[in-house]
Length: 268
Length: 288
Image (tube, rainbow over all chains, first blue to last red):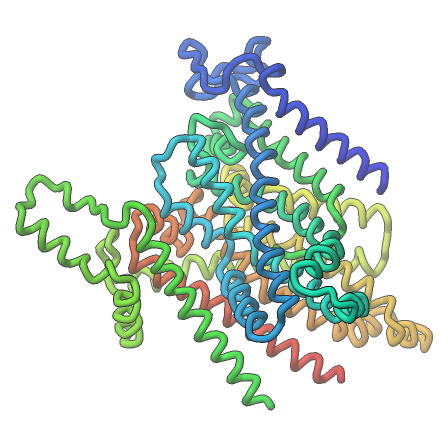
């Protein structure tokens, strides 16, 4: 199992490094259209062929991977930070504040995440610039994905508040901000990190689902979500099986995440 | 005791549902493009018709006023008329709920059946090869978006409706497998085995009651997961269900449909979770 975990980590790092160095590995710009080579099969010039607009699939796959692998952790940072703020404060303060936050968490968890995100994303302008659409998509995912992690962090903060260590610190006159910064947050770090890492694949899959229904990152900017839209054309899959490459890469990366992430049976 | 518990569930349910509806209404109202209306671009309309059209939407500008009027009418069974589809929302909901319910019931039943059928032998026999294969299969389905599964099934002339089952099954499999393994480590199961009870009897009488509460909790959550998976499946495979309606309404900024859907979905998941909570408390009371 340890070998598999190491292998998964190596694959993840390799995929991440290649996508970061996309300019070197894919010399053709992802939006450049070769009108004379529309839906071309794989060749030396186009390793994965071209799409229906004559754009190089290999370039689009590398740049799309970069978008998904860079911004999913970004969204995870936003959601984890919000979860720490809301859940941590609720767990530490207790009382009515805790009850209100718990109800708010229940409210967010009672609405299926994709439904909530679908409504929120669709309400934002759909004709925005590609870069803006990319930032909006992942920012909204980050802002809406805090409830699950907040519940876990709240429980962690609650048990920490009642621990001997915190009581001892309080008895020594340590209170307020110092107590939170020096004693609470460092002890919550394992829970927070676990929540951060488990959020990343959720956001990657979330973007892929939204991209498939046309509400993810806007064209011509590639992402795994909008690259998977080609799967809606069975004729294309039959003639050019390389269109399955984004799906293969997505499955491979998600599988690697499963091996690398802390073992926790969550149902999200 | 029971009445207090039930009252707490009911009040939490009502409050959460109402706040969810208000949240949905607020989101739509303050979303960009809310004031836009395609009808206003109709060249046949004169100034007074455009003014009348604007007047008809005036009540929707104040979100609290809109929501209170909406709730009042909802209590009388009137969910208003869809702005984009020009049909009563209640009619749309009834028509489409049937499709989504069929999709979800088939998906949840299939997912649980498949998950449990694979999990029980994996946990009871602990054969390494079987365990590895089933874990890999469930891991694969955890990594593929539900809509992709539906599309692949659709193009392979398979039942696209079963895509939800393939989304549910890996979670059920992993959770149930781990629970059963844990249950077999409990002292009362050891005692039952030491007394020479048959493996089937040990499983049915000592393992199943032990894991039932956690599985019930998972069942409550599966409804929410199934609905989340149904949205892209309905959109891409053109199933005229609630998920597709939500997508169309969101794109058209159809306030009456979106508020009704948010309330409906929040109420549905709250009922599912409360039912599983009550079932869990009944199970654990029997255990005590």
